[in-house]
Amino acid sequence: MKLEVTGLTKCYGKTRAADGLSLSVASARVLVLIGPSGGGKSTLLRLLGGLETADAGTVVINSHRLLTDPAALQAYRRKNGFLFQQFNLFPHLTARRNIALPLEKVHGHPPAKAEEIAMQALDRFCLLDHADKLPAQLSGGQQQRVGIARAVAHQPEVLFLDEPTSALDPEMTAEVLELIQELAEAGQDIILSTHEMGFARAVADQVAFVALGKIEELSPPAELFGEPKSALCQRFLSRVMRY
Ligand code: ADP
Image 1 (cartoon, protein in one colour):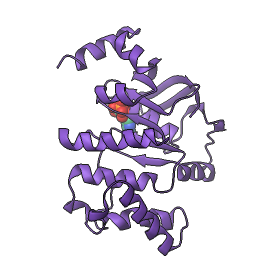
Image 2: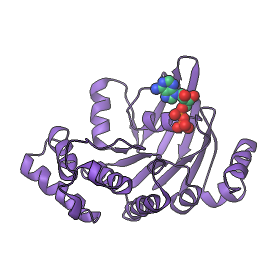
Image 3: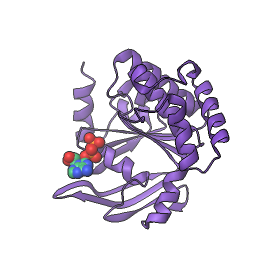
């Protein structure tokens, strides 16, 4: 994917969650956002994914300029896939229906076709045994895997993942991270935020350190984790990598 972000600004009251943020990525399969809590990672993901509109600034993703009118944003969102920390699945629907329903309602597939694609997605991620279970009958890791299966069932151009493992224990975290890695290796473009530094280092082509509503540093992972240039990034990494 190619990304050109200029002067992106988003305020919530007096908080500048994106503060004239600029970012230029010529080519990356996986862009990982890291940084302190409240630094603006989630806001940036929502702006890049078209889930929110910026107060100012421009986003050009794969040569497509993000427009702000509701119809264009809706069409753009439909092309992409999303997964957040938790509460992704409809609690009253089985895993299979959770995947099939958006394929019908959002992507316009006839019910039989939506079911077929849903079963293929469950099969791809070794979730067929769970097709007819409700979210409450699945572990947190399985729920996130179903969430990812749903997010990629319509073959999104870009998959946006906002701290997909932050609510999971270590073993479930591993199963979700492995799945994300598999998707990346299969060629899926992904933008994700995470607190899992080892994973960020392993899966990213580019890592952006986001703090105070700006990109403080953008580098390939070996560089950013090996020799961070910005003082803020150095401080952050020395704190989070200590334990
Ligand atoms: P991160 O993902 O790095 O933790 P966020 O993008 O969630 O950072 O938050 C950046 C700042 O914007 C924080 O100060 C947060 O409290 C604020 N913020 C984010 N979303 C909202 C919102 N919907 N309403 C009010 N403030 C928000």
